[in-house]
Length: 89
Image 1 (cartoon, helix red, strand yellow):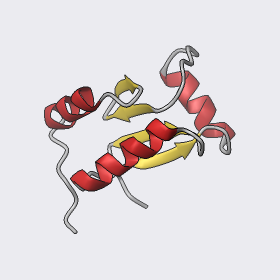
Image 2 (cartoon, one colour):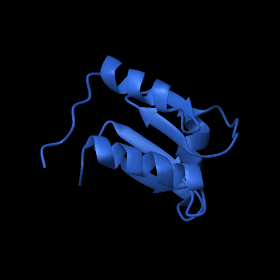
Image 3 (cartoon, helix red, strand yellow):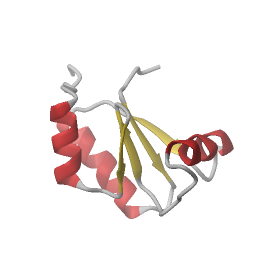
Image 4 (cartoon, helix red, strand yellow):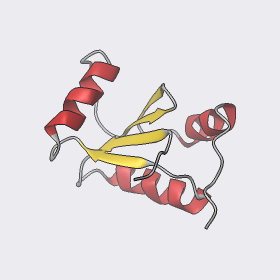
C-alpha cells in the first residue's frame, strides 16, 4: 500500500490519464490510481471532492489541490509547492 499524496481519478480509455501516469512515473512520483468506472466508491469520492461537478478525467488530487485534466505546468508547480519528493528507486 503506497501512502502517496497524489490520487489520479481516471478511466481505462482516457489517453490523457495514461500520459499523466507515464509523466509521474518518469519523475519517480508515487500516486494512487482510481478507476471511476470500475470503482463506484472512487467515483463517489471524486464527486464529493469536486462538488458533483464532473467535467472529465483525469482529475488529480495532489495533497488536497484538485487539478482538472493533464495540466503539466500546474502538476509540476503543485508537486513543488507541496514538497512531494520522488520515491527512491
